[in-house]
Image (cartoon, rainbow, N blue to C red):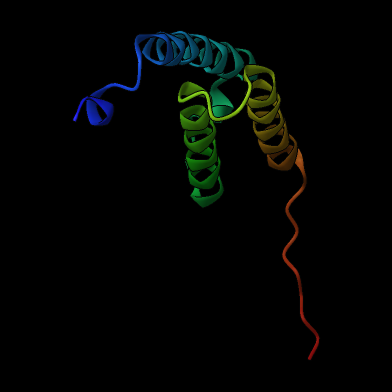
Length: 95
C-alpha cells in the first residue's frame, strides 16, 4: 500500500525541486516573451497553452531532463511568437 502513496522520499524531493525549477523557468519565458503569450487568445494560442502545460507536467514529474524540457518550452514560445508575426493571407482555391 505504501508504494501507492509514496515511492520514496528522494523521488518526492526530486519532484518538488523539478516543479519549482520548471515553474520558475516557464514564468521567466512568459515574462520575456511578452503579453502575446497570454493575451488575445485564439484557437492557436489555446493549442500552444495545452502544449506548454503538457511539457510542464512532464518536467515537474521528472519524466524528461530539465534541459530538454527548457528547450521544448523555449521552442514552443518562440514558434508561437514567429507564427503570430507571419502575415496571414487567405488561401484562394481556384477549383
